[in-house]
Length: 285
Image 1 (cartoon, helix red, strand yellow):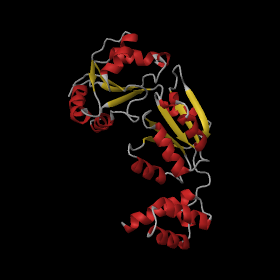
Image 2 (tube, one colour):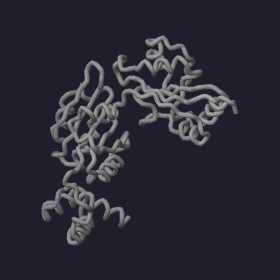
Image 3 (spheres, helix red, strand yellow):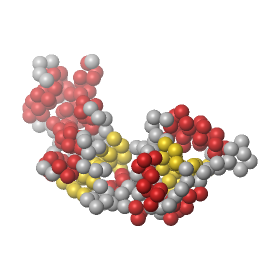
Image 4 (cartoon, one colour):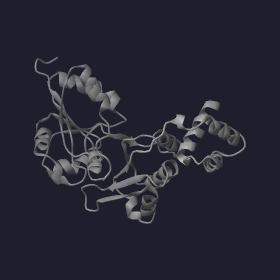
Protein backbone atom coordinates (compact mmCIF):
# COMPACT_ATOMS: atom_id res chain seq x y z
CA UNK A 1 0.00 0.00 0.00
CA UNK A 2 1.24 3.49 -0.85
CA UNK A 3 1.95 5.87 2.02
CA UNK A 4 -0.17 8.34 0.06
CA UNK A 5 -3.12 6.39 -1.38
CA UNK A 6 -5.38 7.94 -3.97
CA UNK A 7 -9.11 8.59 -3.96
CA UNK A 8 -12.20 7.51 -5.80
CA UNK A 9 -14.33 10.37 -7.05
CA UNK A 10 -18.04 9.81 -7.76
CA UNK A 11 -18.68 12.43 -10.41
CA UNK A 12 -22.14 13.55 -11.52
CA UNK A 13 -22.53 14.44 -15.20
CA UNK A 14 -25.36 16.30 -16.97
CA UNK A 15 -28.67 14.53 -17.57
CA UNK A 16 -29.07 16.49 -20.79
CA UNK A 17 -27.97 20.10 -20.85
CA UNK A 18 -24.15 20.25 -20.97
CA UNK A 19 -24.21 23.60 -19.17
CA UNK A 20 -25.08 21.67 -16.01
CA UNK A 21 -21.55 20.20 -15.90
CA UNK A 22 -19.85 21.82 -12.92
CA UNK A 23 -16.34 23.32 -13.09
CA UNK A 24 -15.37 21.08 -10.19
CA UNK A 25 -16.45 17.98 -12.15
CA UNK A 26 -14.38 19.08 -15.15
CA UNK A 27 -11.32 19.75 -12.98
CA UNK A 28 -11.66 16.39 -11.25
CA UNK A 29 -11.95 14.41 -14.49
CA UNK A 30 -8.86 16.20 -15.80
CA UNK A 31 -6.81 15.44 -12.68
CA UNK A 32 -7.54 11.73 -12.04
CA UNK A 33 -5.45 8.91 -13.49
CA UNK A 34 -8.42 7.02 -14.94
CA UNK A 35 -12.11 7.56 -15.61
CA UNK A 36 -14.43 4.59 -15.19
CA UNK A 37 -17.39 5.10 -17.52
CA UNK A 38 -20.60 3.12 -17.81
CA UNK A 39 -20.33 3.34 -21.61
CA UNK A 40 -17.18 4.88 -23.06
CA UNK A 41 -18.90 5.50 -26.39
CA UNK A 42 -21.63 7.49 -24.66
CA UNK A 43 -19.21 9.45 -22.49
CA UNK A 44 -16.73 10.25 -25.27
CA UNK A 45 -18.69 13.26 -26.67
CA UNK A 46 -19.02 14.72 -23.17
CA UNK A 47 -15.31 14.36 -22.44
CA UNK A 48 -14.41 15.69 -25.87
CA UNK A 49 -16.72 18.71 -25.42
CA UNK A 50 -14.88 19.71 -22.23
CA UNK A 51 -11.45 18.81 -23.66
CA UNK A 52 -10.91 16.12 -21.03
CA UNK A 53 -8.15 13.80 -22.23
CA UNK A 54 -7.90 11.45 -19.24
CA UNK A 55 -7.91 7.79 -20.22
CA UNK A 56 -11.36 6.21 -19.99
CA UNK A 57 -12.24 2.55 -19.31
CA UNK A 58 -15.60 0.78 -19.51
CA UNK A 59 -17.03 -0.09 -16.10
CA UNK A 60 -20.56 -1.45 -16.12
CA UNK A 61 -22.89 -4.07 -14.65
CA UNK A 62 -21.23 -6.88 -16.58
CA UNK A 63 -17.68 -6.33 -15.31
CA UNK A 64 -17.88 -4.23 -12.14
CA UNK A 65 -17.72 -7.17 -9.71
CA UNK A 66 -14.66 -8.63 -11.42
CA UNK A 67 -12.79 -5.32 -11.67
CA UNK A 68 -13.59 -3.67 -8.33
CA UNK A 69 -10.78 -5.39 -6.43
CA UNK A 70 -8.26 -4.46 -9.11
CA UNK A 71 -9.28 -0.81 -9.06
CA UNK A 72 -9.19 -0.63 -5.28
CA UNK A 73 -5.64 -1.99 -5.31
CA UNK A 74 -4.65 0.67 -7.82
CA UNK A 75 -6.08 3.38 -5.57
CA UNK A 76 -4.27 1.94 -2.55
CA UNK A 77 -1.08 2.10 -4.61
CA UNK A 78 -1.57 5.82 -5.13
CA UNK A 79 -3.78 6.30 -8.20
CA UNK A 80 -6.97 8.33 -8.19
CA UNK A 81 -10.03 7.22 -10.15
CA UNK A 82 -13.31 8.85 -11.13
CA UNK A 83 -16.50 6.96 -11.83
CA UNK A 84 -19.16 8.42 -14.12
CA UNK A 85 -22.40 7.04 -15.51
CA UNK A 86 -24.08 7.83 -18.81
CA UNK A 87 -25.96 10.68 -17.15
CA UNK A 88 -26.59 12.02 -13.67
CA UNK A 89 -25.20 10.71 -10.39
CA UNK A 90 -23.38 7.36 -10.58
CA UNK A 91 -24.81 4.39 -8.63
CA UNK A 92 -28.37 5.78 -8.74
CA UNK A 93 -29.87 2.93 -10.79
CA UNK A 94 -26.44 2.80 -12.45
CA UNK A 95 -23.26 0.71 -11.98
CA UNK A 96 -20.68 1.37 -9.29
CA UNK A 97 -22.01 0.01 -6.01
CA UNK A 98 -19.62 -2.99 -5.73
CA UNK A 99 -16.62 -0.69 -6.17
CA UNK A 100 -17.75 1.89 -3.63
CA UNK A 101 -18.74 -0.78 -1.11
CA UNK A 102 -15.35 -2.47 -1.43
CA UNK A 103 -13.57 0.88 -1.24
CA UNK A 104 -15.21 1.51 2.13
CA UNK A 105 -13.99 -1.90 3.32
CA UNK A 106 -10.45 -0.79 2.41
CA UNK A 107 -10.98 2.61 4.06
CA UNK A 108 -10.36 4.31 0.72
CA UNK A 109 -11.45 7.94 0.66
CA UNK A 110 -14.57 8.51 -1.46
CA UNK A 111 -15.23 12.05 -2.67
CA UNK A 112 -18.58 12.82 -4.31
CA UNK A 113 -18.76 15.57 -6.91
CA UNK A 114 -22.47 16.49 -6.89
CA UNK A 115 -24.59 17.48 -9.83
CA UNK A 116 -27.79 16.73 -11.70
CA UNK A 117 -29.95 13.75 -10.74
CA UNK A 118 -33.05 12.95 -12.81
CA UNK A 119 -35.05 11.64 -9.83
CA UNK A 120 -34.52 14.74 -7.68
CA UNK A 121 -34.89 17.10 -10.64
CA UNK A 122 -38.23 15.52 -11.52
CA UNK A 123 -39.44 15.57 -7.91
CA UNK A 124 -38.58 19.25 -7.47
CA UNK A 125 -40.84 20.24 -10.38
CA UNK A 126 -43.54 17.58 -9.99
CA UNK A 127 -46.02 19.38 -7.77
CA UNK A 128 -46.15 16.27 -5.58
CA UNK A 129 -45.12 16.17 -1.92
CA UNK A 130 -41.37 16.55 -1.52
CA UNK A 131 -41.02 16.21 2.25
CA UNK A 132 -41.05 12.39 2.13
CA UNK A 133 -40.36 10.29 -0.94
CA UNK A 134 -39.16 6.84 -1.99
CA UNK A 135 -36.94 6.27 -5.02
CA UNK A 136 -37.85 2.85 -6.45
CA UNK A 137 -35.58 2.81 -9.52
CA UNK A 138 -36.70 0.67 -12.45
CA UNK A 139 -39.75 -1.56 -12.10
CA UNK A 140 -39.56 -5.20 -13.30
CA UNK A 141 -39.78 -5.71 -17.06
CA UNK A 142 -42.58 -8.27 -16.97
CA UNK A 143 -46.11 -7.07 -16.27
CA UNK A 144 -46.90 -9.72 -13.64
CA UNK A 145 -43.81 -8.88 -11.58
CA UNK A 146 -44.36 -5.18 -12.13
CA UNK A 147 -47.93 -5.37 -10.82
CA UNK A 148 -46.78 -7.32 -7.79
CA UNK A 149 -44.21 -4.64 -6.98
CA UNK A 150 -46.76 -1.88 -7.47
CA UNK A 151 -49.26 -3.73 -5.30
CA UNK A 152 -46.73 -3.76 -2.48
CA UNK A 153 -46.59 0.04 -2.77
CA UNK A 154 -50.34 0.75 -2.90
CA UNK A 155 -50.52 2.00 0.70
CA UNK A 156 -47.15 3.82 0.63
CA UNK A 157 -47.76 7.37 1.84
CA UNK A 158 -44.52 8.83 0.45
CA UNK A 159 -44.21 10.17 -3.10
CA UNK A 160 -42.94 7.34 -5.32
CA UNK A 161 -40.28 7.91 -7.98
CA UNK A 162 -39.50 5.47 -10.78
CA UNK A 163 -37.22 5.40 -13.80
CA UNK A 164 -38.72 3.80 -16.90
CA UNK A 165 -37.68 2.83 -20.39
CA UNK A 166 -39.56 4.56 -23.22
CA UNK A 167 -40.28 1.10 -24.64
CA UNK A 168 -42.25 0.16 -21.51
CA UNK A 169 -43.68 3.46 -20.29
CA UNK A 170 -47.15 2.88 -21.73
CA UNK A 171 -47.38 -0.66 -20.34
CA UNK A 172 -46.15 0.57 -16.96
CA UNK A 173 -48.75 3.34 -16.84
CA UNK A 174 -51.43 0.78 -17.72
CA UNK A 175 -50.28 -1.42 -14.82
CA UNK A 176 -50.15 1.58 -12.48
CA UNK A 177 -53.70 2.50 -13.49
CA UNK A 178 -54.91 -1.06 -12.87
CA UNK A 179 -53.20 -1.42 -9.49
CA UNK A 180 -53.31 2.14 -8.11
CA UNK A 181 -56.59 3.32 -9.65
CA UNK A 182 -57.28 6.16 -12.05
CA UNK A 183 -57.55 8.92 -9.44
CA UNK A 184 -53.97 8.67 -8.14
CA UNK A 185 -52.03 11.82 -9.07
CA UNK A 186 -49.05 11.07 -11.28
CA UNK A 187 -46.35 12.90 -13.20
CA UNK A 188 -44.47 12.13 -16.39
CA UNK A 189 -41.09 13.91 -16.41
CA UNK A 190 -39.39 13.32 -19.75
CA UNK A 191 -36.16 14.53 -21.37
CA UNK A 192 -35.32 16.71 -18.37
CA UNK A 193 -33.07 19.68 -19.19
CA UNK A 194 -33.26 18.82 -22.92
CA UNK A 195 -34.98 20.53 -25.84
CA UNK A 196 -38.22 18.53 -25.65
CA UNK A 197 -38.57 18.48 -21.86
CA UNK A 198 -42.02 17.45 -20.66
CA UNK A 199 -43.39 17.68 -17.11
CA UNK A 200 -47.04 16.63 -17.16
CA UNK A 201 -49.09 16.13 -14.00
CA UNK A 202 -52.53 14.47 -14.06
CA UNK A 203 -54.57 11.67 -12.46
CA UNK A 204 -53.31 8.30 -13.69
CA UNK A 205 -56.24 7.76 -16.04
CA UNK A 206 -55.62 11.13 -17.72
CA UNK A 207 -51.85 10.66 -17.79
CA UNK A 208 -52.28 7.26 -19.43
CA UNK A 209 -54.52 8.87 -22.04
CA UNK A 210 -52.00 11.68 -22.61
CA UNK A 211 -49.09 9.30 -23.20
CA UNK A 212 -51.18 6.86 -25.24
CA UNK A 213 -52.32 9.61 -27.62
CA UNK A 214 -48.88 11.15 -28.18
CA UNK A 215 -46.08 8.88 -29.42
CA UNK A 216 -43.53 11.60 -28.63
CA UNK A 217 -44.26 11.07 -24.93
CA UNK A 218 -43.04 7.49 -25.35
CA UNK A 219 -39.51 8.56 -26.25
CA UNK A 220 -36.41 9.68 -24.37
CA UNK A 221 -35.34 9.49 -20.74
CA UNK A 222 -38.36 9.10 -18.48
CA UNK A 223 -39.14 9.55 -14.79
CA UNK A 224 -42.57 8.58 -13.45
CA UNK A 225 -43.82 9.86 -10.10
CA UNK A 226 -46.87 8.83 -8.10
CA UNK A 227 -48.47 10.69 -5.24
CA UNK A 228 -48.44 8.86 -1.93
CA UNK A 229 -51.63 7.25 -0.71
CA UNK A 230 -52.98 9.83 1.72
CA UNK A 231 -55.95 7.60 2.48
CA UNK A 232 -53.88 4.50 3.08
CA UNK A 233 -55.55 1.85 5.19
CA UNK A 234 -53.88 -1.12 6.69
CA UNK A 235 -54.73 -4.62 5.60
CA UNK A 236 -56.56 -5.01 8.92
CA UNK A 237 -59.19 -2.58 7.63
CA UNK A 238 -60.55 -5.37 5.44
CA UNK A 239 -62.78 -7.54 7.58
CA UNK A 240 -62.61 -11.28 8.02
CA UNK A 241 -65.99 -11.47 6.24
CA UNK A 242 -64.40 -10.02 3.11
CA UNK A 243 -61.56 -12.52 3.34
CA UNK A 244 -64.14 -15.27 3.47
CA UNK A 245 -65.98 -13.78 0.51
CA UNK A 246 -62.77 -13.51 -1.48
CA UNK A 247 -61.78 -17.08 -0.68
CA UNK A 248 -65.14 -18.28 -1.94
CA UNK A 249 -64.99 -16.20 -5.11
CA UNK A 250 -61.39 -17.09 -5.88
CA UNK A 251 -62.24 -20.77 -5.71
CA UNK A 252 -64.63 -20.31 -8.64
CA UNK A 253 -63.52 -17.21 -10.55
CA UNK A 254 -60.40 -15.60 -12.05
CA UNK A 255 -58.63 -13.05 -9.85
CA UNK A 256 -59.85 -9.89 -11.61
CA UNK A 257 -63.46 -11.02 -11.68
CA UNK A 258 -63.38 -12.09 -8.04
CA UNK A 259 -61.90 -8.73 -7.01
CA UNK A 260 -64.47 -6.80 -9.04
CA UNK A 261 -67.40 -8.67 -7.50
CA UNK A 262 -66.02 -8.45 -3.95
CA UNK A 263 -65.47 -4.71 -4.36
CA UNK A 264 -69.01 -4.18 -5.65
CA UNK A 265 -70.57 -6.31 -2.91
CA UNK A 266 -68.64 -4.78 0.01
CA UNK A 267 -68.08 -1.23 -1.16
CA UNK A 268 -64.33 -1.45 -0.44
CA UNK A 269 -61.95 0.10 -2.94
CA UNK A 270 -60.90 -2.29 -5.70
CA UNK A 271 -57.18 -1.69 -5.00
CA UNK A 272 -57.60 -2.67 -1.38
CA UNK A 273 -59.57 -5.79 -2.26
CA UNK A 274 -57.02 -6.67 -4.95
CA UNK A 275 -54.21 -6.53 -2.38
CA UNK A 276 -56.15 -8.80 -0.04
CA UNK A 277 -56.82 -11.23 -2.89
CA UNK A 278 -53.13 -11.43 -3.76
CA UNK A 279 -52.22 -12.16 -0.16
CA UNK A 280 -54.87 -14.89 -0.01
CA UNK A 281 -53.56 -16.49 -3.20
CA UNK A 282 -49.97 -16.36 -1.89
CA UNK A 283 -50.95 -17.89 1.45
CA UNK A 284 -52.80 -20.73 -0.29
CA UNK A 285 -50.07 -21.49 -2.84
